[in-house]
Length: 168
Image 1 (tube, rainbow, N blue to C red):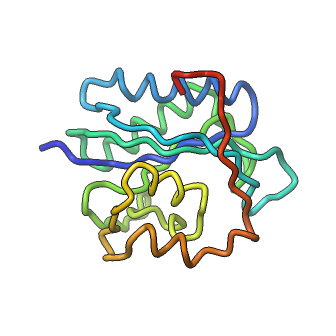
Image 2 (image 1 turned 90 degrees about the vertical axis):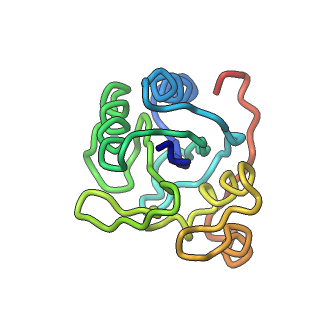
């Protein structure tokens, strides 16, 4: 059975636009993943470790027959292929792919937490999610629109950007 999944993508070092485009391409080439939607890209201030370049972030919507743990393995392999090195928490990265939502599932294991544990705090995730599905409700019953209204946008800036790379 196909599940609707939302993935957050971002990066702030190296050829970010190209890495994001390649990540989406690699996901879409996977035989058990179909990319069906993509938000605009947003420039966002770093969270947790502020002395680094701003990030380009967005969200894609996919359908997949993979189980959550299998999808996590696929996204980790793509990150690694695109040069992601996990040196420090919240540090700079070439590409980051997070599983935000996986159907209506709630998962809490050592390796995987869905909905993403910081989704509700991140305007760079909530704003693109709303763009893809303005009526989206989390498995916890919370609506994305209501979560956005609760955010303190002054704490984190998110600006829509127009990348010349149409495929991103």
